[in-house]
Length: 467
Image (tube, rainbow, N blue to C red; front, side, top):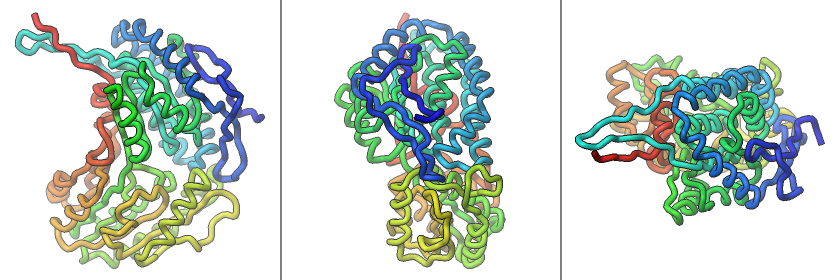
């Protein structure tokens, strides 16, 4: 056992022993060494967690919105005091470079939590002779991924708690440790027992038990499209509400009147953020033919500047992938690709230890190929030429996904192209991420929205009272 071991589950406001003595090893992907062990939860543990959440629901839901917001404010303060520990923990269990761990992995969830602590209640309103009120949906099962392990937890938990729901959380078994820091902060903030419960374990065991549990009123899931489909089926059997944030294969369109240097550099940075393990990553760079060769050269040169190495070295810009299996999956896509390799590749030198993949850029990518159609989830960028705005839009929309995207060019023209993209969010000329804006996708990128008032609404039922 190590100092990072977490041998208990958090149920009903207490640290309790799990039903099984089996544990899951949490690995440091930069060193390939075991960091810690956490409980391998069971369906019995999920039953106890759901019972605790159900018992706490009436009392939590009966609080005023402002009272719940006060709890979230205290939770924010307690979590903020752990910002350095959050960054370190994510650096260890995910391999995120320190700069990214501090700014994004720790900073973003704190901003989201603050937004819910500061948010106003959904206003009741009158429509004809009806009073329209918003009420919490009930007990929420939250199943979160490994790539942004605290942000994805907070995006669900903060909105659900603000709405008046109670939560059973299953963090990813690959990066579960940072979720325990949230629990530590919740205890310090005095969150009532049973409002937040945490069961670690695998998706096929704990995730499936949550998705199919008869007393879970809603399942909120972020992860792969294939798993999202399975969760939808499990919840459908009892007609439970589902919110899904799934895969992406986002296009970054660079029009001929764009600032090419900036568009390419920001585009490469977006594609390689978090070692490419980002569902919104702009992994398809679409460039007008008039600037195509220059863009390919710029992208290859930019990729070459991404230093791989120890996540805790300030010079490191690209950390490892989360696991051996993820590395092998990404290398498989690279080795099968038939496009022109202009940077990186599976034979490029990488650190001897750790699950690293070199930043890789392909040019002349067929828009219908596997490389352009499948979510790779690694530092792999595909560059595709186009001749007109219409062709760019057609290529961008030729995807089973529709989560994010970018457009670069003169403002009005770029905005016109952005409006035509079948995707949940689009950044024009590098527009900054907005944690108050709705986040979610079209098509197989998911169902529902997270963040801000839109995320809050996902955890509410709407009631009409006629009088």
